[in-house]
Length: 258
Image (cartoon, rainbow, N blue to C red; front, side):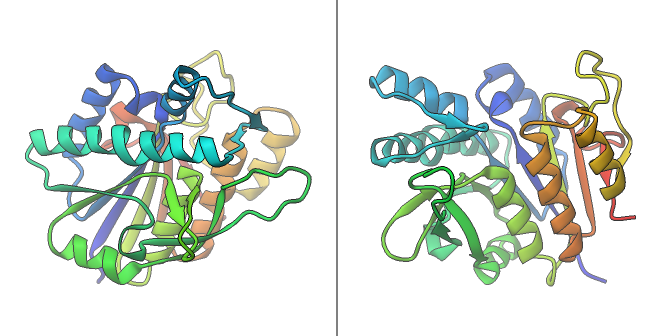
């Protein structure tokens, strides 16, 4: 039997709020090793860009990353946000190591093809260095991965954190029984956005299509669920969407192919 690996993706709204992050750290501490954390940080990048006088351009919830914005997200994601999380985990006795996709060729990607929108220096993942990641895990280190990848030609690329988490999960599925947890500020996928207790317990492809058609599932939740389904198809054992406070407990929304 393979050892279980838990990969947690935590949203920017949590990591950017000191109180929410402190609470999340306590929950993440309880997750058994081996484990990996992938984090966001978009609001912090927007705030830094504003301070520097740079305009933030978003299309369908995705950041357009020109050369100046790439410098900002590298500074914020790979530096400020990542190292703050690492330091807080070290303070809890967790031997964490902060990484971007460029470190040890961890995550290789290619610049997104221009179709209707030119997103600039945005990457779509091609491969994960599963050998390197497994070596860190076998050494009892906890990788903390920022949403930055590289193209193998010297350029960093801004990359969606949900996608990175899914790619890491599928990349490690041959070596571990992988559980992927998307962790954000809600208890799960909600049938009524104004009711935090209206959690949809299970979502399969049929229900997903129905909920998208009737507007229950929209925006950023659509690609998140698409990533979840793709992960299950590629060997990930379990995918859950839940809140930080329920990270180590039952509940949330389970994603199923059946």
